[in-house]
Image 1 (tube, chains in turn brown, purple):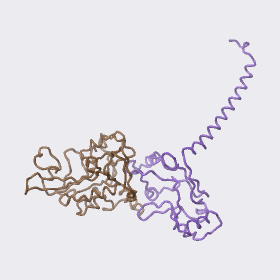
Image 2 (cartoon, helix red, strand yellow):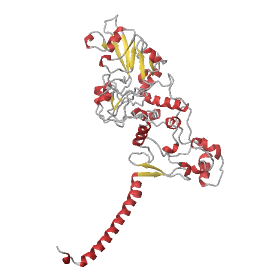
Image 3 (tube, one colour):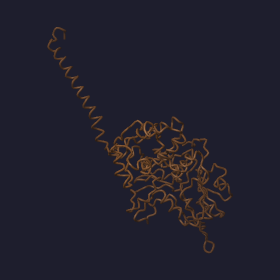
Length: 258
Length: 196
């Protein structure tokens, strides 16, 4: 697949997650589930089949007590900027890279459920819907009308709450503006984070909080060596976390997923 | 075979056959038109009447002088309100202004008991589509009639036709129509521009 077509756009949305601030509380996961109309199965004990667009991983430095250190890595879709793996393999164009915003889409009504994307994603950010969604009686009243529901047999993933971008744009248009202000469009997880560990915004706007954060010395991305150029950055002053971010099999004895 | 062996009666019979064939063709044409225009749509689409036979003409430029956005407004958050609520009607029709039976029905059945009118929408999109009226009306400055029928000339509300299998309205805009216009105007056709 060739490089994404470069379009003169003033927007490219990204996320910065400060791992030193993250307490692993899981509020981002819950906010995401509720915002994006996820259903909950009667028995969620089989986590391999759980659909969690925003998943919190627990990692340790692998040292014995008392030197053990633990950190949490929240993992949304990385919205890869370069050779987006899922977009490259999709045979029906059910997912595309929007050159205007940098957001990678997933169109459920177009997906044929082949699951190539689930296999291609190096971040395990894509999920497959094995069952038709069922909501307990009365819960359908809590569904978000701005988010489309998914049916059985399609792949799904985090959309950076694209529907919130659409709504923020509408508000700007009615007020006669074309461009959004920093903070007008944020994802549900960023909004819910109690320690403000998640910052979301336009990376191309030099005045935005995120543009400054991604330049900080502790910034890194997951599996950077793959060259997919994720738009989700992580911050940490702990060198062992930064090293784990580029995962490595050579360091297997020291630290990893807990 | 030579000319003289051809029986003359055969030619006359041929004329008769030709006119009979034409009659059959015409009858078949009529049957096809009736089936295609009347029967088939009735089979594939259900037809639901509006609760009140709304007269757009009487409210528009030739009547009360309202423009489309007089009743079909934007909300402050940028979303489009679509079909107006009863509050809009009450502003003028707290009591009947004329003698139309539909206005009497409005006052009697909806305004007096303060009950919202269960209007049916003609143009709605499937759940996976996000249509922004703000982008098209406020930014691109398109007229309402670019996509919707010109209601200012219509004095009655036609029934709402809904495809029985898909549940789409007859007026649901197709993805091709959206894509064509976006391509012509140089607007992005990326999936997440219109899908959600």
